[in-house]
Amino acid sequence: MNAVKWVLIDSNDGATTKDGSTLSPAVLEHIAEAVQDQVNQEFAAEWGAQATIRAGTENDIQPDEWAYGFVPTLPDR
Figure (cartoon, rainbow, N blue to C red):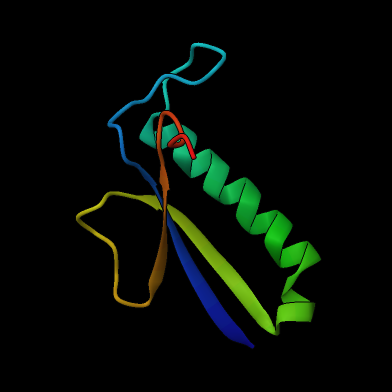
Protein backbone atom coordinates (compact mmCIF):
# COMPACT_ATOMS: atom_id res chain seq x y z
CA MET A 1 0.00 0.00 0.00
CA ASN A 2 1.27 3.48 -0.84
CA ALA A 3 1.88 6.21 1.71
CA VAL A 4 0.70 9.80 1.92
CA LYS A 5 2.76 12.08 4.16
CA TRP A 6 1.40 15.25 5.73
CA VAL A 7 3.02 17.73 8.09
CA LEU A 8 0.95 20.11 10.25
CA ILE A 9 2.50 23.53 10.82
CA ASP A 10 1.59 26.37 13.17
CA SER A 11 2.26 29.31 10.87
CA ASN A 12 1.76 31.74 13.78
CA ASP A 13 4.15 30.41 16.40
CA GLY A 14 1.59 29.70 19.09
CA ALA A 15 -1.71 31.05 17.82
CA THR A 16 -4.52 31.36 20.35
CA THR A 17 -7.49 29.13 19.62
CA LYS A 18 -11.14 30.10 19.95
CA ASP A 19 -11.29 28.59 23.46
CA GLY A 20 -8.24 30.62 24.55
CA SER A 21 -5.70 27.80 24.54
CA THR A 22 -2.39 28.02 22.70
CA LEU A 23 -1.62 25.98 19.61
CA SER A 24 1.63 24.37 20.75
CA PRO A 25 3.81 21.66 19.18
CA ALA A 26 2.32 19.18 21.67
CA VAL A 27 -1.22 20.11 20.63
CA LEU A 28 -0.30 19.79 16.94
CA GLU A 29 1.19 16.36 17.61
CA HIS A 30 -2.03 15.29 19.33
CA ILE A 31 -4.05 16.55 16.35
CA ALA A 32 -1.71 14.72 13.95
CA GLU A 33 -2.12 11.42 15.83
CA ALA A 34 -5.92 11.72 15.95
CA VAL A 35 -6.26 12.67 12.27
CA GLN A 36 -3.84 9.94 11.19
CA ASP A 37 -5.87 7.31 13.07
CA GLN A 38 -9.14 8.52 11.57
CA VAL A 39 -7.82 8.83 8.01
CA ASN A 40 -6.22 5.39 8.11
CA GLN A 41 -9.34 3.75 9.57
CA GLU A 42 -11.86 5.44 7.28
CA PHE A 43 -10.08 6.23 4.00
CA ALA A 44 -6.94 4.11 3.55
CA ALA A 45 -8.68 1.23 1.78
CA GLU A 46 -10.50 3.58 -0.60
CA TRP A 47 -7.37 5.66 -1.29
CA GLY A 48 -5.10 2.65 -1.51
CA ALA A 49 -2.70 4.48 0.80
CA GLN A 50 -1.89 4.88 4.48
CA ALA A 51 -1.37 8.38 5.85
CA THR A 52 1.55 9.44 7.99
CA ILE A 53 0.80 12.76 9.70
CA ARG A 54 3.17 14.64 11.98
CA ALA A 55 3.65 18.04 13.53
CA GLY A 56 6.53 20.07 12.17
CA THR A 57 7.83 23.50 11.25
CA GLU A 58 8.15 25.44 8.03
CA ASN A 59 11.86 24.59 8.06
CA ASP A 60 11.57 20.80 8.14
CA ILE A 61 9.08 20.00 5.38
CA GLN A 62 10.34 17.04 3.41
CA PRO A 63 10.04 16.92 -0.41
CA ASP A 64 7.45 14.12 -0.30
CA GLU A 65 5.20 15.77 2.34
CA TRP A 66 2.09 17.85 1.92
CA ALA A 67 2.17 20.81 4.34
CA TYR A 68 -0.94 22.11 6.11
CA GLY A 69 -0.55 25.42 7.92
CA PHE A 70 -2.72 26.63 10.77
CA VAL A 71 -3.43 30.37 10.49
CA PRO A 72 -5.30 32.68 12.94
CA THR A 73 -7.91 33.84 10.42
CA LEU A 74 -8.92 33.21 6.84
CA PRO A 75 -8.75 36.04 4.34
CA ASP A 76 -11.96 37.81 3.41
CA ARG A 77 -13.20 37.00 -0.04
